[in-house]
Amino acid sequence: MASRNLDFDKLLTDVPVVSSVSRLAGFKERGIDPEKWTTFLVIATYERGVWRLLVSIPKSFPYNLPRIYIENAKDYPAIGHINWQGGVCYKDHQGLVVNYRDQEGVLCGCLMEALRTLHHHYNDITRNDLFMEYEDYWESLPSEFWTTMALVEHSDNWKILTGYLDHQKERKTKKPTFLAIYDQEWEANEFYWPLEKLRKRKQSKVLYLPLVSPVTPPSPLSFWTCKDIGDLIDAHADLEIAEGARVWAEKQKWDNTTGIIFSHPKPSGERALWGVLFSRGDKAKHPLASTDIRWKIKPIHLQNHTERYLLHRGGADVLLRNKKVAVIGCGSVGGNIANNLAKSGVGELHLYDYDFFYPENIYRHVLGGLHIEPIIPRSKVHSLSSDIMINHPFAKAVGYGKRLLDVVPCKDEKSGYDAIVVATGDFTGELIYNQIHHNCDNATPVIYAWQDGFGIGGHCMRVTDPKGPGCLECLYTRSSGFKPHPKTSFIAQGQTISKHIGGCGGVMTPYSYLDASQTAILATRATIEALKGECGNEFRSWKGSPNELKMNGYNVSAWYEKLDQGESQDREKYVAPNCKVCGTGD
Picture 1 (cartoon, rainbow, N blue to C red):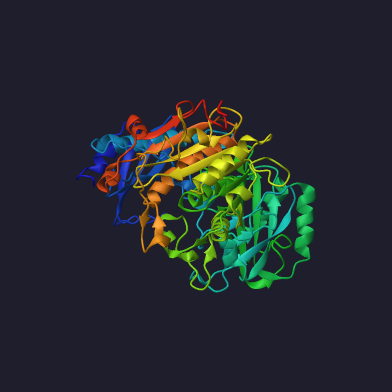
Picture 2: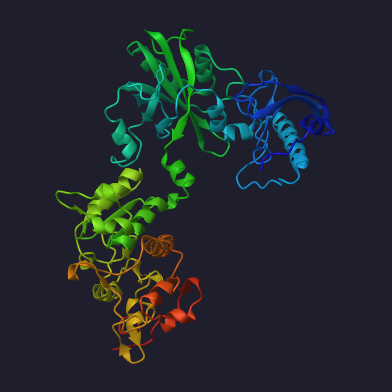
């Protein structure tokens, strides 16, 4: 909804704290397009402070809010929640709801919030917010380059990193730029795809220099010189570390492109990571060895690839980094579970399956056509393990062409699994495995996962205490004894729902990728809870629509009828007291 024809001059003038409003026709500084924005110079007094503000109102207002800048930003030091261009970050737009009907109130509210932000942070002598959001401020500095991947781990001493240069000019810039900066101490798997793309690029040495105290960034609309960089190192680096770096710099060959990556502590205890690129037309000593003013300096905007940042930013759990999980059966359900566990932060996965990946798997497996091999079919586990490591830098995945009963569910020096996920679809084998698990003295938590057909639902069972009540055989146990159909199935007993496409060799259970994904999410959550030690034995299901099942002439079970729609969790109803494995049965 675009703004109606509002008199912005009058609306701004009517704000009580505003003393002057001037429309700036054709204003196109600080990234403002005058075709899309109308800009005003507003002078306002707030808490006895006088502020000269540029208020740029978009034609899409109030769907998009005004940009507000300090007009005379050069007169101010770096301030928290103010970027290098003097832009005021007065709202957290994530989840923000604007009353689009009250456009006058929205405009006044934005201006008042900007003034409150300016007053608070200008008078904050600690500059805590500035140091906490250091990277955000740094990224607001102008750069002629795309961002640079920073595959760098913090160290307490200086060290040498590898800078990969865009020597093929693929970024269409005439000036040097780093594609990535790589640290040999970066603890990731060697198959991570961006690394593979960089290996044959031209390289340059980049210095990493840790600082012992926070650095105040360049003031708005200004930047450092080569001498300023030397001065900030003297002021913020450990004397011995700085001297070691300078000795190294003196020994380097003359060059025309180099960089320094800095890190310094934040108030939170974490570290800010930022970089500077040095370039010139001729070759010269390293800028740490020579403060020649001919060195041109540009900020490097870094994409942080540290493990803690990526896992935390992506919602993964850093505490799962040292966990090792086996996934047995890597079809549509198991493959999704393995991928989910990697994305959840699990550090090491061992994948077991003896089958190959064929074209008929594409539309309900986490893998796709990239893994179809026209000469010799690829193993599911080898394709899945490589796919996981290509896409997740801090995950290790190993594939084994073995079957369910080859993996012992007991903790020992050989396996040491923190959890085992079983998604084979071989229910007889899984019942035998359940018996073996029950007999283990030092048992690993086992999570079973399987799918009902026609989108009617899926199930998982978690067994963390195989000596306690509740195991896989409970599902097949009735008061009259063992039955070859689980009582928790959503499909009534005595019906065969398998489809045959192209003869007996094409037998399959009808369900979709979405169905398998939902079951995988159910089982993944159960597994993560087991890894965190937050659970006991439990049976879970998700219940879908019966329409497709009934349209194909089949009936739902009594268990399906008594459950509510959605997900269910049960620790008692599925347990069979007379179960021959975990109960009192003979």
